[in-house]
Image 1 (cartoon, protein in one colour):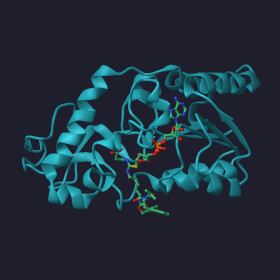
Image 2: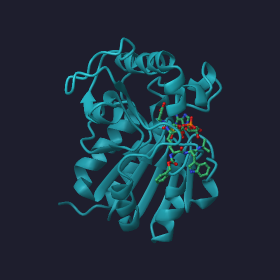
Image 3: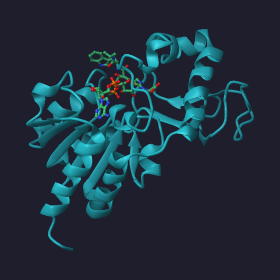
Length: 233
Ligand code: BV8
């Protein structure tokens, strides 16, 4: 059985990471287009850097929750038959024990040098525009995929979706593409599709099965179900 799991901000909500759409969502303070577009970075690099510096610093104040840990258990059982792709730029999947995580929208703990195109592991601030450790130029930007930019790893993701027997979407509103289109794509290639979300997403009608509630409860229960179906190795 090949499984593709897509996660969004909702899987990190119970860890205390604000989601995008919720009332006190992340964007309250900032209009999306003011902070998450290349144009915004051109116009106000310090505002954008400060926005991501704050989110990067906040990672030290949050911990993975049972949903992250359950997916690490699933990875341990399925190995490379599990493909975990996330829209999240936090590091809670890795800290929950997952070893192979595809961050299609980038990562807070990485910087992208516009001078030499290197992806540089980064834990501190970028707001003081430090030089790139590779080429020395002060051209380090947040290594995240902004609106209007091409998500990372789309080729691998497409192959995994085509080969999937099961596609599961966890904690995402289905408002942002191309991620929001994965359920229909995987379904077209014969995958059974399941939504695990606090409330119905914008694409809920495209799923074969939808369970609504907190990820911290739904995901461990679903993983236990899958593990129960696996023949003892
Ligand atoms: C692109 C990184 C070309 C930065 C992000 C087609 C139609 C319309 C528009 C478009 C289209 N195609 C492209 C577009 C434009 C645009 C787009 O989709 N716009 C939207 C607004 C309409 N897309 C792009 O620009 C993308 N690029 O298309 O390039 C291309 C495409 C394919 C192949 C080649 C080229 C780039 C988009 C990436 C932008 N960057 N993030 C950052 O993080 O700061 S997007 C960002 O917002 C997140 O990464 C995430 O993707 C999205 C937020 O969504 P969610 O994660 O779902 O979070 P949200 O708050 O919305 O929902 C949370 C959900 O969790 C809710 O449903 C809630 O009920 C649930 N929940 C809450 N608590 C819990 C819970 N569930 C369970 N348990 C809980 N406890």
